[in-house]
Image (tube, rainbow, N blue to C red):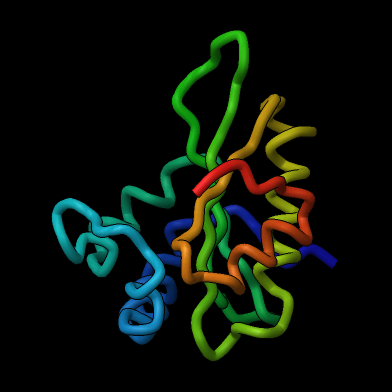
Length: 141
């Protein structure tokens, strides 16, 4: 059973509520954004859901986080970055590992990317394990 689905406008309020409730938990792992705090606005998620490569991660029927592909175009090597986050109350259930597995299938089989990359904070060992379980190779620090 799939645990990801494409994000819709109907998900905006739930995503924003989850993001705000998990701000302290998530911000320690994420890079600064410009402008600061933009991920905690309705406008951010209204724009975010418009891309075809934005997905929500489900824990049963509840939105537990997001997973997405970010790409910059189609050249000889079409690549994408995968990003994901799971709310603290949903962490430790294997949802991120399964979500990344499913988004890789979308990236390669559906979208035709040649390469998918990801990055984590150096201290974020749990996220590094998610990537390792999905066959990612550590390239550098």
